Amino acid sequence: MKKADIAVIGMEVMGRNLALNMESRGYTVAVYNRTAEKTKAFADGVAKGKNIIPTYDLKNLVDVLDSPKKIMLMVKEGQPVDNFIESLLQYLKPGDLIIDGGNSFFKDTIRRNKMLSEKGILFIGTGVSGGEEGALKGPAIMPGGQIEAYKLVEKIFKDISAKAYDGEPCVDYIGPDGAGHFVKTTHNGIEYGDMQLIGEVVWFFKNVGMKADEIADIMAEWNGESDILRSYLIEITADSMKQKHQGSDEFLVDRVADITRMKGTGTWTVQSALELLVPVPTIAAAVFSREMSQDKELRLAMAKKLTIPSGKFSGDKKEMINVAHDALYIAKISSYAQGIALLQAASKAYNFNLNIGRIAKIWRAGCIIRAQFLDEITKAYEAEPDLPNLLAAPKFAGFVERNIEKLVKFVGVAHQCGVPALAMSGSLDYILQITSPIMPSAQVSALQRDYFGAHGYFKIGGQDKPEVMVNQEGKIREFHTEWLVPGRPEKEITK
Ligand code: NBP
Image (cartoon, rainbow, N blue to C red; front, side, top):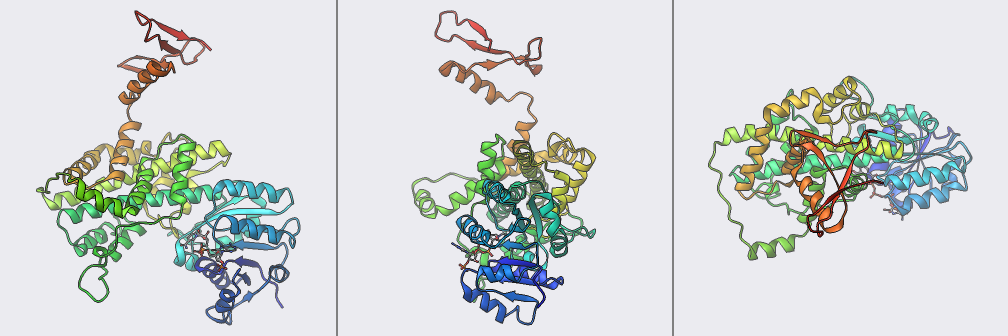
């Protein structure tokens, strides 16, 4: 019997569909699942007659594989991944490869990579994005690990991945150990941001009196061939908003509870951002909004206790739709700028050696945030690899300068109408902060910290000289005021 080229462990939607995808590209795939019934149902169902070998114990799974063995885990992240790695180890030899394709936490991936490489086993932690359909027809794949490990599966990954409009496969070697999972996690954080931003605009439209199908039409227009907002998420918003509630004339969106659950990657993105000191207000707003959405009982109770006065929208609806369009685009640029800044900081901190232009390229198709906008990001980083921030790219900077007042207007009008817009305003304030040579709030809090805690402060040359004062050797000069001493003398701190 022909040996299998690769194995997939985990027969839930992702594992099943990836196995089918691989088989459809000419590979023989061995499969295994903890609960044997799922393997059997798969083998007797859609996999019947295909080059898919069902196995019911791990030794058998490894035996039917060609060497070096390539085994892809598509199971729930966390302990199940560690358990499978431990069980597989007894059957593997140096040079064999384990791939974790689930949404694992990147620090777990770094740990597993280290542990396995000490035993000579290669390990890839890879993001696989695109959900159920992507796994079957072509996902975006973000593999991290040893380059020699990637070489073992490069062809398979390229064959099964989505292809961008120019035919390029949406997969590329991301970097060592946890790089792939970090990039996938950040991709999901950016996805949270996109979803929240779109949700806030849709909710605003609803609050100014538009019906779901009317909003669906606007979204469909925004997904037009050459529209700057054209993206998968806008497309599915348009499609899902038209859906009627089964057996009634109501729209489904009007009957769906305002509770968005989450699995963890958005939270990990924000946690990493906190650890690496990178502000990601839009992504954090998306996570916080999901948290707030889940406390339905609290909101129901609070709505009875506190009535927030709000105005009614009285402006021109058509004009407001155009305002919202450009406001959403700017908010999106801001959100991606935050996500990319996080990738860059992680690249430095963990030596991931990430190439932002190439990562944006991978995201052009297959994944949930796919959009033509990503092409612009790739071009921006190809033209200027050392861009200080995405917002500095001439094309984006120009658009923001010309249209920022629309985001200002959107946030203002939404708030006047009592519509929360945490992510939209987070995006706006991020732009306002990052372009402020002097952040007044920081000046005030620096003084407060020195006053109550003698934490010291730096100085600038004056309101017209925002650069921080340095000494002759170029070192930043630090000062402290003796707040409680009469005359409040100031002294320079020398370390
Ligand atoms: P799930 O995330 O629902 O995981 C189901 C699989 O994990 C089954 O094979 C199940 O075995 C196995 N499993 C569990 Br649960 N607990 C286990 C344990 N203690 N020991 C051994 N196996 C265990 O499946 P999925 O939605 O196909 O996702 C697979 C991976 O891909 C996950 O990491 C997920 O985060 C990631 N991912 C999912 C999507 C998506 O759209 N669903 C997209 C991108 C990435 P059992 O059948 O015996 O219970």
